[in-house]
Amino acid sequence: MNNTLKKKVEAAEMWFIKRILKVSWKDKKTNDEILDMAHTGRSLYSTIRRRQMKLTGHIYRARGIEHLAMTGKINGKKSRGRQRTTYVDKPGAAYKKLVHEVLL
Picture 1 (cartoon, rainbow, N blue to C red):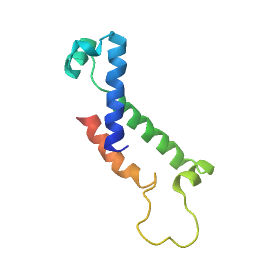
Picture 2 (cartoon, rainbow, N blue to C red):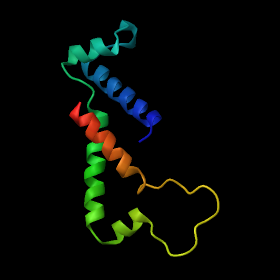
Picture 3 (cartoon, helix red, strand yellow):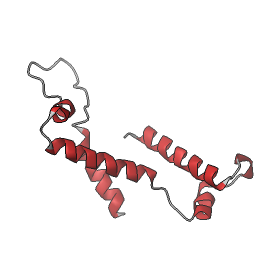
């Protein structure tokens, strides 16, 4: 997930909490005040990341069509220019971020 998606997920989470607490946008409450009212913190993004990593681990260990689709290993020559970023390239960096987020 990139930063724009992270911001959208966090904004959606705040919107959900506001809807649950029935806080109007006219009340001019800050996000911190709303989180204090709900006695919670932001956890949706970290939950999504953790579940993505669990699913990725299951797919990598299985040797079926899911693994082939995920890795995308195709015989032949690579195309010219910058190679596309694939889902396979992301888990290493994403795992480091996830560990950092969970430990902090």
